[in-house]
Image (cartoon, rainbow, N blue to C red):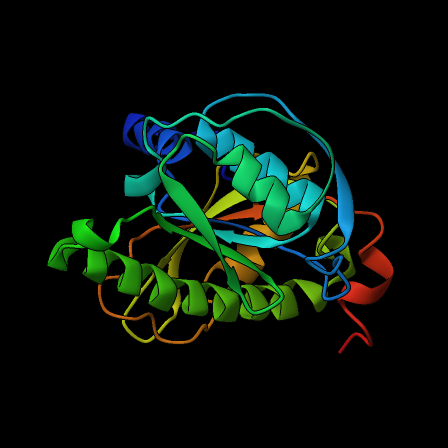
Length: 230
């Protein structure tokens, strides 16, 4: 079912809320993304943090996990120049009260900047939850990537789209929505068909939903991201 036409008012309101406060956003990255200590050229203007993080993930080709409660109302610092990805992200986050934490070599999660005297049970639980959800995000990305790689039209890295997924307790995608078109009606339909009913790992308790995925174009990742197609 095509998602860009004939949407009701409730769906439109949901899309607006999603764009303003992503439950979490992830950039589908290549397995051959630059190492986090390699320098990358960044030129990202100061802007609302959600948009800045989206731009960062696309340039760095890394997965990002961000909690809407952490980024709401925050603005990034502009960065321009060549930096390792973690240093660039720290510069981007300057003044936001947030710190990046690597998730293996695949990406980052964000946690509040806490002083030793300022750690409360609530913030400690929030940090623990962010780490747990970040680990789950990696599993979601792997599952979505495998599914998209089974069809040439939806090869990751060949198009851009922002999509949302709702999961049941077993990890099955019960509903998907394209917040932005891929630019081709046929590919929109194929993407929706692949995502609807997709079986993913069971989500951890308390996972914010919907899950929001940024599928970003990256010509350099296309030859390697899918390996041998099944």
